[in-house]
Image (cartoon, rainbow, N blue to C red; front, top):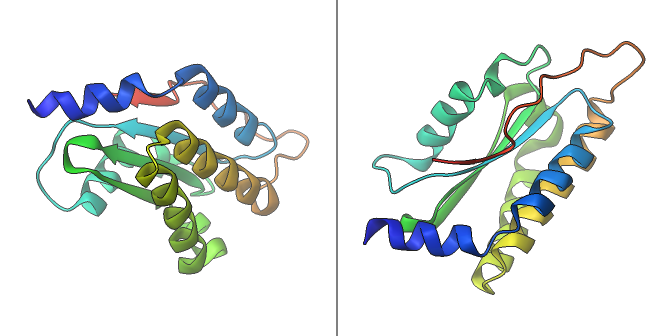
Length: 148
């Protein structure tokens, strides 16, 4: 029964659109964006997001400009995480606004649209604050939408 929510959530996602949006959002920045859909977990979601970001290597980026959207369908919760430099540039107001946009889509049953809105808004901010200039280090391509 625990996996039912997660499987239903995953079945409504268009993984190719999400990955395309992530690649597009990362194209002009040194930052990284990831989405993780996790099984039902115990503990504070903020802590789970931090551990997931660490495991995905987002906390090891030289400019500390990684972003992660963690969704736990079994708990009907999500959390948007930004590494310290990204958070310092954008502030609490951005993350609150972004979470509200995602939540609005999720409440309407548009899970794909919510994630796309989050990815696109984050990509724009990454490009504005952490642009990829000539000779910028290329990131290793990793799985962008993680289903565990």
